[in-house]
Image (tube, rainbow, N blue to C red; front, top):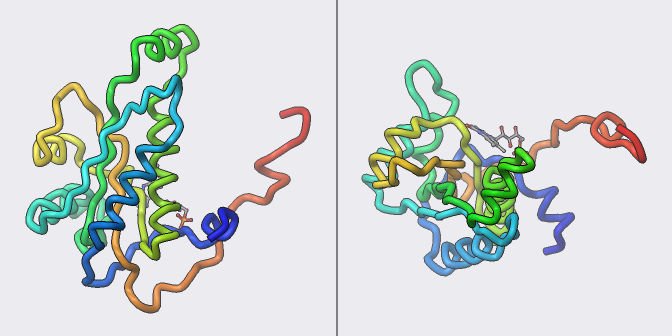
Length: 181
Ligand SMILES: Cc1cc2nc3c(=O)[nH]c(=O)nc-3n(C[C@H](O)[C@H](O)[C@H](O)COP(=O)(O)O)c2cc1C
């Protein structure tokens, strides 16, 4: 599938079929993250795939609450991918401090994007979740206190009849310009 088609096809999937994700596909998704570019090639991430049903359910339940319920669909997904932000290389840390840049956050975003686009190519649906109880998930997955979770991504086959939605986006003239801000 060409990249333009993948970009058009990828959308946040919030309704999943009761169907497991094949191990080969999980391996291909790990590879998509492994090959992602990063500042000074620091690769400041650890990808945790949560597939154990009980544990996955507990992690999914830490992405919503009675008050904030928009991630209530998360338990439907058969897999949760948790992207942990690792410490970048010392040279990257020095560069980031000198230039006041948050390289690992940028890196995690690129890695997540590669994950989601590759999943689309494999016929799988994803939804990046930025809203979750970080402390609860860190405890469940034994993530060291010194680490932060960048994103949780739901993964699975979209439920039948989940059509491609029109993309609601700013117009090109609004979000891009030529030669000046
Ligand atoms: C960093 C980030 C955090 C997000 N957090 C959530 C979330 O917590 N819950 C959710 O349902 N969608 C979440 N989304 C999905 C966005 O709402 C979605 O990408 C956007 O509305 C565009 O829709 P599309 O992905 O279908 O093209 C998140 C996306 C990103 C990139």
